[in-house]
Length: 417
Image 1: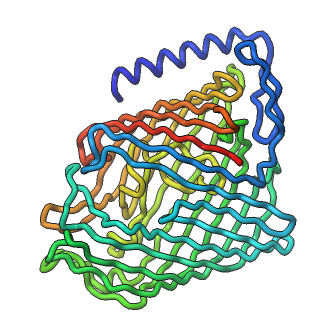
Image 2: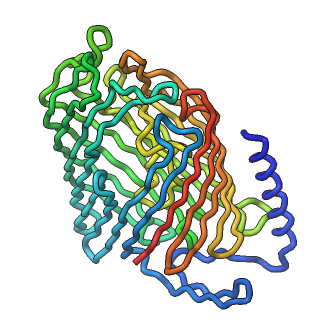
Image 3: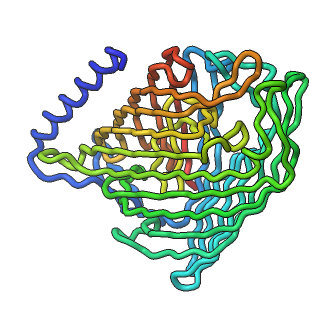
C-alpha cells in the first residue's frame, strides 16, 4: 500500500470513530426507496419515496490511468440501465451499444420462464498487453452473441424488497462466435473459424441485502454461482504457428464455474454510519480448455451493489474486460463512512490471484499465475437533478501492468429518470 494512502485512511478512520462516539442519540441510516426529510448545511432537503422496481438510469463517465495501460490513458464509461417489474413479469437491461445484457422473465407463481440475450460485439481490433505494452500483431476483431431460455424458480426472501429473492435457473443457450483479422494481425496468428455455439447454464442467486439511500449495500448477505457449458460447432486448431497452437480437441467445448459471496454489516460499538463490507469472487475453467476467446473477464469500476451486478468481478484500476483469466480468486475488504445521508466515503483493499492470460512478443498466448493488491478510496454523493456522482482513486501493486505499479482515477455520473 502507498504510505500516503495509508496515512489518509488511518486519519479518516480515527476521526470518524471519535465523531461516532460523540453522538448523543442513536442514528438510523436512510434506506433505499424511503422518503427523506433532513437539514443539511442550513438547507432543508426533501427526497420523496421512490419505486425502486421501476427505474431508468443513465451512467456516463471515464477512467484515467497513470501510467498508461498499453497505449490507453483514458477509457470512457457509458450505459443505460432499465428495470421494470409488473405483476407477472419483469425485465432488467444494461445497454451500452456494443456490449449489452437483456433479460425478460415471465412468472407463473414461483415458477418462471427466463429469456436472456447477451452480446459482446466490439467492432474495433482488440490487442493483448504484455509488460504494459500492446502486442500489435495480436490485434483481432471478435465477438459473441448468445440467447438463453429456460425454466427458473424464484422465491422472495427477507427483507422483502423488490430485489430480495432466491433464484435457481436452468437455461439452454444458442449463439454465434466470429473472429476477423485486421491490417495489424500477425501473419503467424491463425484465427478460429466463425461458428454456432450451443450449451447450457445453471445459475443460482441469493440477495438478502438492504440498500441505503444511495443504493449501496447497507446490511445483509448475497451469494450466487454460474455453471456454464458451451460447445463450438465448427472448430479447428488456432493460435500462433508453428509452436503455440490451441488444439480443436482441447478447446472445442469448455466448462466454467464462477461464484461469489458478499456481506455488509455494522461495527460493534459504533453507529450505523460505519459499515464494513467484504466480497469474494472466484472462477475456474476446465483444465486445458481455456483460450483467448472464452477466458473469464475481469474489469474495473466501483464495488458492485445492484442485485444484477453482484456477480461481476471487479479489480480497481483495470480497463473494461482487460484482464483475461482461466482461474482466479478475488477478495475485497472495505470500510464505509456516512458523512451525510447522501454522502459516503469508501476505503477498500482488494487482493487477487489468477492464472492470467499473457502474450509474448512473438504472439504466443498462455496463462500464468499472477497476484496483486489494490488500495481504493472513493466517494459516493448525491448530485443535482436527481443524480449521483462516484469518484474513486485506486493504487495497484502491479497486477494490472504486469509488475509495474500504477493508479487509476474513475468518475461516473448517474442520472435516474
